[in-house]
Length: 332
Image (cartoon, rainbow, N blue to C red; front, top):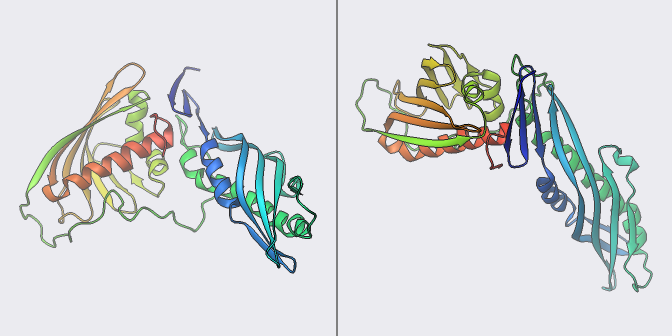
């Protein structure tokens, strides 16, 4: 089996004849999410109140693997937090919380949640409040972390294989919300007329992707790959004369010329542009050894839409493709 490796930061992609395998390091994201969920947790009782005020230590790692279309989540953490209790009379106490075994191998009910007072603190009934009610909230917060881990990264990690589509989880009825700017916010109402001349401009963009020209070419014409990096349903007929529609209808067009692994010419438009007005977009791919240089030439873009279109291609194509498939060093 012939394989090649593309790497981008902590996100690696093995491309083989019959397999596309991805791995994403989500340790940084996990650290931020755990702190977000734990800080400010509060419980109250007849004795007073307790609140998690600091998370000074998070030792561990987390990653997600896509193996033949199956997502595998790995995480292992030793969590240490600080809580502050305030009695009804206003006396403050400090204590610690430790969870040494937050791991994909343990169920939430199996977590060891240790609650204690700091050294030299006098005994207080607030400790029992934290051990009973506080521990419940900590357990729930850690369970929420696992839920977020599995939901926030699912779409970006399910990728089609080289010869087909990897199996996916059953779709839910909830639609993924797209940034209301889509590839940019609407700046003018679409004209109801056709054939009206409008000022247009042309420009070019250049970007480098850490992958082969054939894989980058396929990213633009394969419906499943388009749906992966746009995170929404799309219609893409990847043949000459084939139509495409993506980002919930915000963008549509037609493939005018296809030169495998080298060139794609399309007519392309935002739905907010004047009716039936299309720009001509040409994608040229050049093999630069371990990477591919993509030059995007845009002609016929309404002048007032130039900045929006540039920003849209950078954000919703270049950055989204790199984030989803690991074709670049930046992850967003």
